[in-house]
Length: 299
Ligand code: GDP
Ligand code: ZN
Image 1 (cartoon, protein in one colour):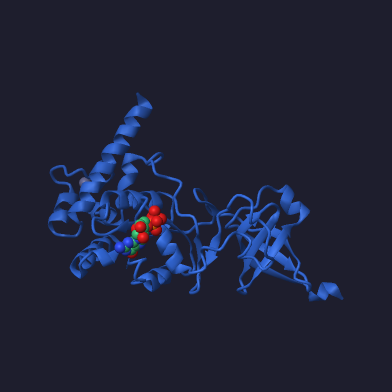
Image 2: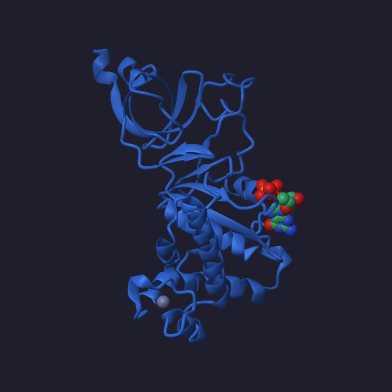
């Protein structure tokens, strides 16, 4: 009889705390689950893991299965992250750092979104220029102000159906954006779950916040990769969509690193406005770094 009242649902682990796993079910509710023995033995279950949960009539829940993991980020420690929001801030966004983050996001095969925050500190013309720059480069762009709330709904729309993390240097307003995207973000671990009280006094764990419009957002900003390690010089052009597109018509083909040699397609693309000068400059700077890194590896 009881068995008939049970149901099996899929969901995502949004946080975990000493043996208890808070799962955001596809149906839109939260349950707190324990692991079935066989699941526990198979290895750690992580925040972000997609799971199949058996929910009893009394609300008790057991994780029966962990579905295959696509990615795992070390910082914040979350599985299945699919989207990186690279944040820079007006009035002087660090566009080199932004381009670097985008390259790293591409290298980790994440969907990348550009967020220019603190637009209350810039003119509409400046904002339009940054937007054009990155839309032309091939990225969805949100121009936001965590302070006034401007553009936050646009950013939220870009995160629907993703598990996202915000990344960018300290002070660009990542925490403010998380609070604007998810007004209850200041909740302590445990308060997100239907059973209150647990975990208050233990170390704070990363949580995935179910955004009102859909999608999950890590409440801890970060990104595990900051170094260009593992990126080969010949690969770099493929990690910048606008450079990649222009490089396709370079007659030197794969043997060219597109540093602006005579006859290379890149300088021409910059001249024609197909690639922004800053993007090409940053490509070359990153290329130098990657080349130095290679040289060190073989010296
Ligand atoms: P984080 O280090 O990236 O998490 O940045 P915070 O969210 O802590 O914000 C850093 C500082 O920038 C704080 O003093 C915020 O009040 C301020 N700040 C954040 N967002 C905005 C914004 O949209 N406009 C303005 N003017 N200030 C902001
Ligand atoms: Zn070339």
